[in-house]
Amino acid sequence: MSLRPVTAIALNTLREILRDKVVYTFFVFALVISLFGLILGSLSVGQDVRMILDLGLFGINTIGGIIAVFAGANLVYKELEKKTCYLIFTKPVSAWQFIAGKYLGLSACLLILVAAMGIFLGLIVYFVDPSQAFFERAKWISVSVLMVYLELLVIIAAAEFFSTFASPIMSVIFTVSFWMIGHCSASLQEFSRLLTNPLLKQLSNLLYWLLPDLQSLTRARYLIMYGQLPGSEFCLYLSAYIIAYAIILLVLAALVNEKRELP
Amino acid sequence: MTEATAVDSSTVVIEARNLCKDRVSNFLRKHYRVLDGLNLQVTEGTTFGLVGPNGAGKTTTIKLLLGLLRPDDGTAQVLGKVAGDSLALQQIGYLPETPYFYSHLTGREFLDFSGNLFGLDSSTIKSRSQKLLERVSLQKAADERTGKYSKGMLQRLGIAQALINEPKILFLDEPMSGLDPLGRMDMRKILLELKAEGRTIFFNSHLLPDVALLCDRVGVLCNGKLVAESSMADITSTGNVQELEEYFLQHTRSEVPSP
Image 1: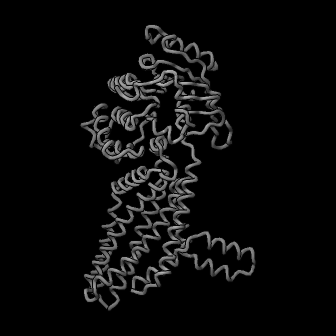
Image 2: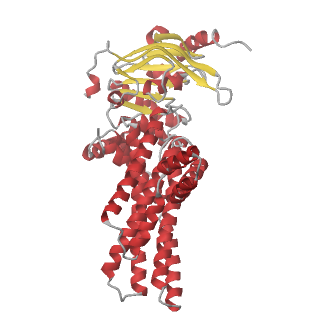
Image 3: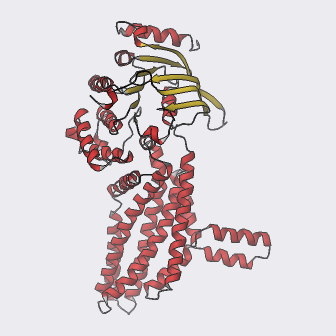
């Protein structure tokens, strides 16, 4: 099976999002972080770098997340609504090639944006506090930003899955709920420990296993940011977990798409 | 001479057997039959025109033959494969009723995108795109975004994308609809060239003058049923549009319920 249709759809999706001027969000990020850096620099009490890093990572995650949710929620729906998919599915393109292409296109766009924001964050930190070795700090920032990107990969997959059968508004609601719950997964596990009813306990456990564990990802990300690597095995496990989760969502999206008729 | 010229006129390339399709209402989930037991055969190299009033089931027929819809009963085959099979789609070109293009792409980029969906290599796409853009007189607007194109330009780009894979069969859904007289003349010229190349063309239309000019065979679809089918030569020996109109009215009047 040829990969050319996948890359063509991915490139088309990337072009579409970039030409929608989504990259302008980078300048919002740059402006906020620069202002914050300057203010903290002038009021320096020794915690400025830490605060810039915290805010920067939060900013990358939030801006990336918003784009993933809103662009992802339109990924498939827009093709159906504008009927551009008629010209795709009357060519030898399978449902999985279409889903994979759309996913890779948005993922590539976010990779560019997240990388640009990460580089800018590194430069601001260096500008505020040039005392620490640039490359050492850049290493930790890069790994942390990579963790943010991993989280976004799941969010894109979820948004694309929901957009195969729901309207953009509903997809946004579903994806944001999925994202929020993913950040409370440890609480869900804690909650199941407190429950005495075996049925409710099992239900709570089931939900914990069904929903993504994004909380561990956030925890690991902040540890890495401050130079405390939680162990390569744990990082590898998290990466494999996130990628597997995204693949499952994409397979489900392809299955929904395969069943679809285009009236 | 193109590859499509060497044809065996007896080879059936499009076949529908007892093809049925239901539409389901949104609220009560009531089933309405929009295509009812269509039996049809189109041989290679033929230009087949499917005519009928609005809502007769013409677009549904094309969508079933392309695999965009699945039949509720019966079978649809194209080039000996089940409709929608990727091996058949590889040799098919399709122009939808209203061309739906990505407004962020230029005409050239869209042809490049279409060629890549067929898995063609870059040099083939580049050379074919250039030739097609010249053929449909879009070379000057090739690097403008399609969002700025007029209806006629979009229709011509639609034909170009349908030809990027050098298809054996072309499915054209109302190729002349919404075009001004000049646009219709351009489209007619392109279709006559394609017909002269010996390609099989299956098209829907309710513009009978175009059907009379282009088609070898005509099918009349009314209320989801194929009520008549004949060769153009049997309907009118002189290519007279009025005779085709009479043929069309004769078969549709008896089917349309009187008010």
